[in-house]
Image (cartoon, rainbow, N blue to C red):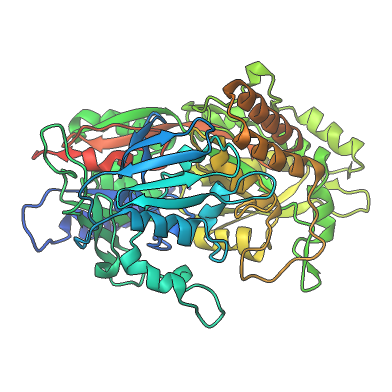
Length: 593
């Protein structure tokens, strides 16, 4: 928002405010953060929100700390190819239902304890494959119509064998999940709290003493100051070495500075307080002019792999006898023509031109453009180009009507009005929301915009279920089955028609639409199919159904842009990762200016 001053004194006052803001930012400049051990190499990067947990198995937000702290058996690199991580090698049986994994020799935890097959057994058998401990990650391992989980057995101290009840194409990528320390966590995994649930579900919260959090990734936690920063120090027992035999990571410390405001983040980067900053199109033109003078480079990682969308709450369930969505509004939201009209009314090309300054393209699919299973509009995917006349006709044909002032009413005379939520702290999201409100206003709808903290938004979407319409995003990747928890009607994150989470009050009268159930079934079929051509056809059908019935109305696929100080070396940007710079943080180097 820009305020235009008409009087000299007002210009002076705005200037003073700007000066005070700069002085405030400089005063809390993260590079002023004093370290006990002088001359240690470090980088300072921004995160827009607080970590919600340090327990890998419970993390659902992005960005998160897992890329710093945790390692799995197999690693998906920046191009989507699989590489050995804690595993030295793996072998797949002829029937494709057994995978034997061999660990590297001499692996250790950050406390120096040995990391062995017992830790792998604990992580999978006692946690990820354990139906008695409900974890979000379990959805990625459920196989077939029954949702059966794989099994695992120990062969020796360095080898385990996974077995699946039927062929499961995504399984190899699934075992990139973090291995967790049995010697620390087994006791709490087996203990029960007052509600009879595993204490593991409340272990390693953000209030935990950092020294108690034992990890196997490139970094371990040194300290955490709420609303300020997370300081990570080099894990001396991390397994990885470079070609010359030097142990990684190269950089001693990473300071993850908590800066909620994108504007403040930009100011801190320009003043030298941050070493890297993911930038939006609104910042691109400003920073591009400053590249040489500011001694940084803007990297273009290509189209972002995540999705941006708007979503209506289609949940028709009741909690304690009360509908989670106003029945009047629920009828609108559950009318396909209503959702299609909204899709046609959103001018996504203008979003590209204005909010993204031309650095993006309209988005139509829930599957990332980098995935071999992406089904493009050129191949026949239905799209919704801006067409206000078609949008209004869809509404009129569905029984809606307009008054003389152009306001929209349903057949019973109810004014079409609903609330749009989004997370705070993102100028891009705020820009999109402003245009969405304007575009739907032209359709005769009144949209009340209410940005809220991300934690509060997540709580409404997956816990209380009391919301109407929101602007959101979901991270993407190469393997579609990673989104099974989104597309399964029983998935842990199925936001448009969320099933209650474990421990939450149950719903009655929840309805699963035929198309919704069909998409869930197709995801099961796609995971079972080993023929790549057939898999592509299956996931193409999921994208056709998604675009026909629009549980998500996709918006814009932006370019992944990151500004990085030239002192940071060996930069490799990957749009397959939310943290497109830090996905290979162990390989980054810094040099003195």
